[in-house]
Structure formats: C-alpha cells, structure tokens
Image (cartoon, rainbow, N blue to C red; front, side, top):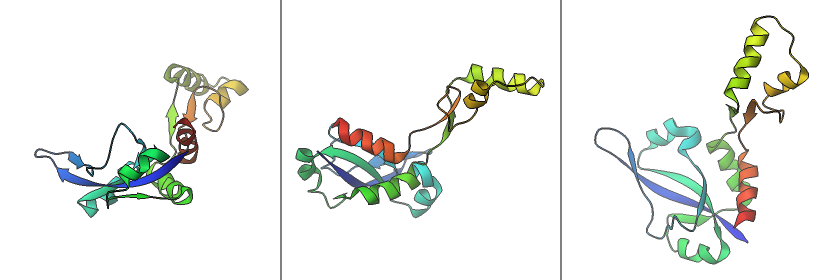
Amino acid sequence: MSKILKVKIKREPILGGGTHYVYPPEYNAKKIQVLCYESMGEEDKVKARGDYEYCIGVVKDEDAPAFLKSNDIVEINETKAKIDGKKWRPQTERIIDEKEVLRICAKAVSGESLTQKEKDALNPDKAEIGVNKSKSFSDLLDEYKTKL
C-alpha cells in the first residue's frame, strides 16, 4: 500500500538566474516517487507567488510517518491529488518517431494520399507510433501506487 503526499518546497533565487529548492528536513528523496511539481503546469503563477511551491509524491505506508513529522508535508487523498496533478502536469502531445512524422507530412504536402496507418500516426489519440500523448496524471498515479 502507499500514501500520497503533498510537499511544500521553499524556493530561493540563484544569483545569475535560476531557482534553488529547499526541501523539508523530513523529506527523503530515496523513499518518495515524485509525480509532479506545481511549476510543471503553472510556472508563471508559482513564480509570481514567490517563496514556495508544491510537489505530489507517493511513498510506502511504512515510510509515510517519517515524512509526516514535517508541517510542510501532508497526506492528501486520491481525488485531491488527481485534481492538482491534472492541473500541474497536463497531458501533452509529443513526437515519438520524428523521421516517420516528417515522412508522412512530406507525403501529405506533396498531395499523396495517406494510408489509415499514416493518418493514425499523426493522431495523438491513436496508439500508432508517431505523435502520441504523454501519460495522464491519473494513469501515472495509478502506476506508481502499484509499483511501491
């Protein structure tokens, strides 16, 4: 079994640009599987807020008490995790096989008819290799809950 944790992380600017993150002392990077950071989906809002942001992670039940000793780490339920996770880690389209996508696009631009397999390769909702979608946060959460 596992627990879902929301961790408050202090953000500090680095001279010359960038950000340094300070995790609570009870945070153990070897025992948590981080699924998303708040800034993955709303970076401008997080930076505008200033000093902190959150991440959502999954830990084994037996590891949770050590994390939860911190006031900056709380357990959240799956519904809350999925609401924040979907907002912070939106599903994106990505090219899996660049050469194949370029070949299909060149064929389409030249006026040649595309096969159904080629059309499917350009459709992120299809499983054909070409343009696909990243895993949804819900799928990722379910996957990591069972891995622990």
